[in-house]
Amino acid sequence: MKLLFLLLLLIVPLIMAFVALRSRMVTRIFHVLALLCFYSAATVIAGDVYATNAHMTTFTTEIHHFLLNGWFLYPSAYLGVYIPYLLWMSLFSKKS
Image (cartoon, rainbow, N blue to C red; front, side, top):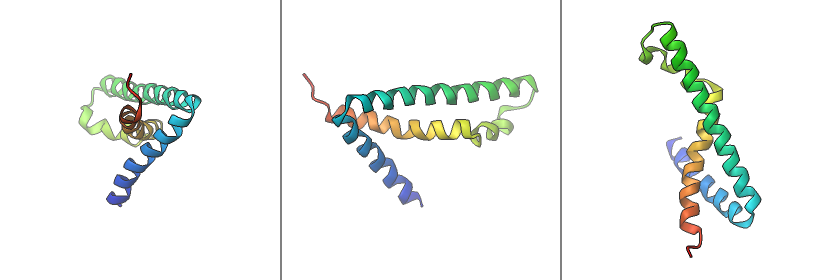
């Protein structure tokens, strides 16, 4: 299973890069989606940290609330693929 995740982490950003090299609109969509995912994940983290502080509990016992939250998990998964995509794009882009 770990090998599958590793292969997907290599293959999906490569596919994204090749699709983005063909269309500028797709590149913008990837960027906007990453921005929305970043703010979504950050909002979940900020809300859970605030709730933890408001209840006066230790953060280490409450960390699973946002790690198992779908509003954190899915955007973070996209960002985990988006960052290697950016690295691939920097390798493939033409430098002037």
